[in-house]
Length: 185
Image 1 (cartoon, rainbow, N blue to C red):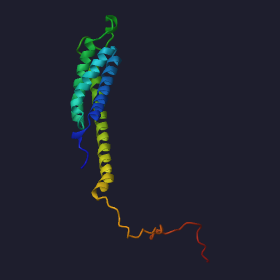
Image 2 (cartoon, rainbow, N blue to C red; image 1 turned 180 degrees about the vertical axis):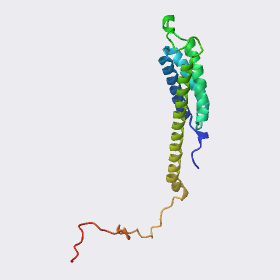
Image 3 (cartoon, helix red, strand yellow; image 1 turned 120 degrees about the vertical axis):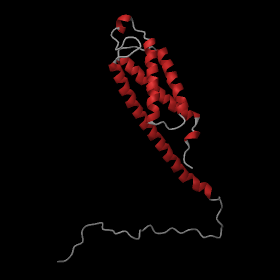
Image 4 (cartoon, rainbow, N blue to C red; image 1 turned 90 degrees about the vertical axis):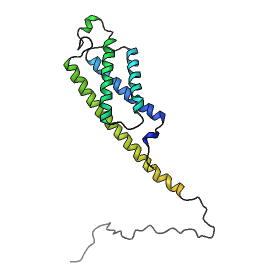
């Protein structure tokens, strides 16, 4: 029986949710800082918790691009609003920020859109690769382990003769090693 994604361990689920939360937070903070804003540590921790909480329920099975894209988009909108509300820069520095208030400009929307789409594609390909490796490992382990349990453990009778080693020479091998044969003309 191949590996069942419904029975994943809680540790595996938490590790996948943490990876998603860190990538989502990194994308949001990087976009906000590149846009001229600043983010305080408590706000980043809150955004990390929000991303982690959104990813945990979905971390039990393989996530596709169609599921990752809207989740990542929604989280980026929420993080953008959170960062804009908690903007700690003085008013003079805020004037140079790429948007005023909570509504971003067209350039920021395009930048967020591209970053979200590329990150969702990257995460979905990573998910596909991870689950392909896990499926292959499960099949390999089953091929190795099942024969051990399918035959009953028995001791061969003592009257049987030990097997004699056979010659390792292959029957259909053509050996042409060495210098060319001299043929008289």
